[in-house]
Image 1: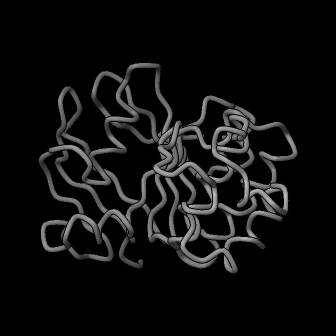
Image 2: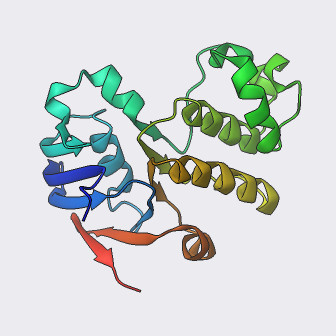
Length: 202
């Protein structure tokens, strides 16, 4: 059996842990659990955005030996509400030539790069934030309710782009409270409750 792409051992953060799990290349895994169970806390810990204990490995390489900015490009966390540091959409993308075809596939307007951020709807912000992280081509994509503000068609487009990343060898861990989405989109499910992470069997 091939080594997992991403492996976590004895991870502890606040009320969580110890947590152990792994994800293989190409897998799309749902992280479920009651509100307040710590799903966002766990994702931020995996991305090394908050202090935490334990062993976390990507491609059998310990996080301890990878500079934090480099780690966060490889293990990329997308919060439910993303930050915007500039007034216009275009300044948030380094390569608009690469970004434009992705915008089209995500059902965004052709001229969205010229828009002020203030003009964006919640759903447009969500799709643009997803585009930003997809363009980084991370090894592991951590998504906190990535389609919560999207209609059915936009959700379908977003899922297709996320799956395309997995199809070329990345892995995805996503939070969703949509049971139908979990059923059609996730390869397996992990549930977090009372600080303990468990595999959910079908």
